[in-house]
Image (cartoon, rainbow, N blue to C red; front, side):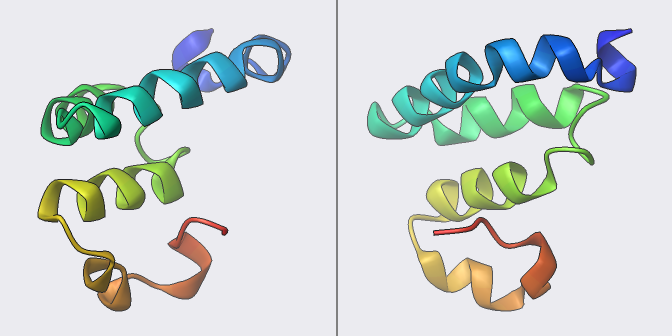
Length: 75
């Protein structure tokens, strides 16, 4: 069920997941976090997060200029 995106589960643990990815970026491990997300069947569901991690990996928010507006992380 997790791969299909169990809404109840994700609602409960979403903040924990964000904290994990934020900490990965803060500690210079954005590339690892991106690879982890890309291996997950949830990568497409979490596409804005994926694009934010890719930008962090590249070290530039300019990366997001090439991403469709509806897929960009909300600020």
